[in-house]
Length: 365
Image (tube, rainbow, N blue to C red; front, side, top):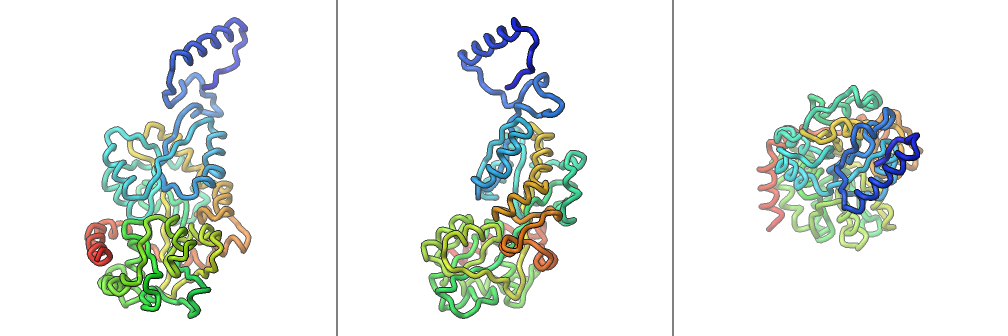
């Protein structure tokens, strides 16, 4: 904790003596600086913001977000890491006394979080960068329960040294020639439900009629080497040569390319599903104003550009520009942005339990 410069030498000496005594006595950080120590330019100085997020690309997030935010506001950011489902479960378990200020969720998990009563509306007056976002990112959940800070899409990737026939459809995952060489995201991941919908679309169905997907999944199951639960797992499977073809989330493309394996990305003829990563303020957060400042920082042009250039996240800030070689690796530009399929997350949330049961009955056999 920083103190204002005192004009009296005697007072400085006393302050140093007291500080030393407290340190020697094992004084602990309270997580927030007294109001007297926070200047008008750094009103949050000394506070600790706790963010619940996935844990992917944390080294780059530290460089682009964590350290700059801490330096700008004189605060500390700590993270709780994990997939959507377990993190939401923890939020619900601690809803009466939350230890999280900001939560980042994707797909229908944000909708579930609203239903579970663990989110509170953000304050638009404290988030001026909202004006720079695509319209669909400003309030994707309704009632200001979250901001879309990143957009990703589910595409197909395959090894060109192993598969010579061009891949064009989600149904290519069912090809018996790929037995033991396929992986798909688990149903509990961000894009697990999207995989169901896309298989349905490839076989005459839709989000309102996913019955064809379950039939297709039965044909696909023998081809699976495994289902993956995090994108880093897919990257390892591809690098180790265990997977030749798989759906992948666009935010993991940079890591897939970095494996050195010859890969081709495909936009299947049935389309690609877009999914927003949504950042929200936790209901009862200890530091709601700092949480709003974090959201504003996260969607700034500078941060969104840095994340895009490092292939961490595709921007929802419409003012971000990146060179063509970077753009081709992101969910970016009118060719993709204007043709994304957004699923009805509220409807999917209501169907989640039944979908998980049907999925497990097929995949676990």
